[in-house]
Image 1 (spheres, rainbow, N blue to C red):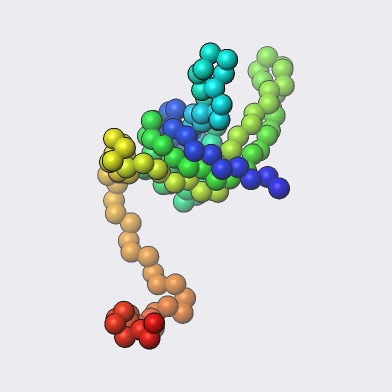
Image 2 (tube, rainbow, N blue to C red):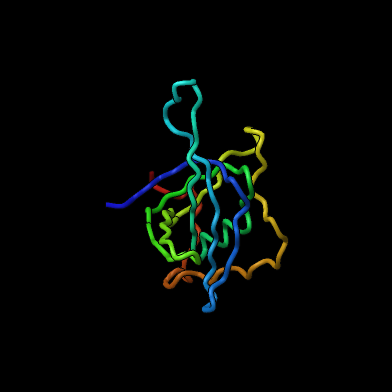
Length: 143
C-alpha cells in the first residue's frame, strides 16, 4: 500500500500549469516538521514536493499561498530523468488525492480566499436522479 498523509506549511506559492489537453496541475512544496527534535533540541523540517491534478489543482492554485497550513493525502511517486549534463536525476513527489486548507482566523491565518478574482463558475447541475428531490422539514422526521 502506498499512502501518505501530511500536514505542513506551504514553502512557496503553488505553480499553476495546464496540459495541452486542458488538465490543471498545481505544484508546490510543503514544510513538514519531524516528530522529534535533533541533538540541539530543534525540530527540523522536511520540504516535500506535492503535485495536485484537476479539481484539487484548481483549489490549490486559487486558494493556497506561501505559509498556509495544509493537509495532503496521496501517494509517493518516484521518477528519473537525464539532466543536460548527462547525469541521471531522481525525483520523489507526493501525488495528492486531496488537499485541505487548515487553520483559520483564530490561529492568525486568513480564511481561504481566492488568490485571483476570476469569473464565478455556473451553478452545478443536479446529480442524476436528484432532480425530483424534495426538501423535508426536520420537525416532520420520526426520529
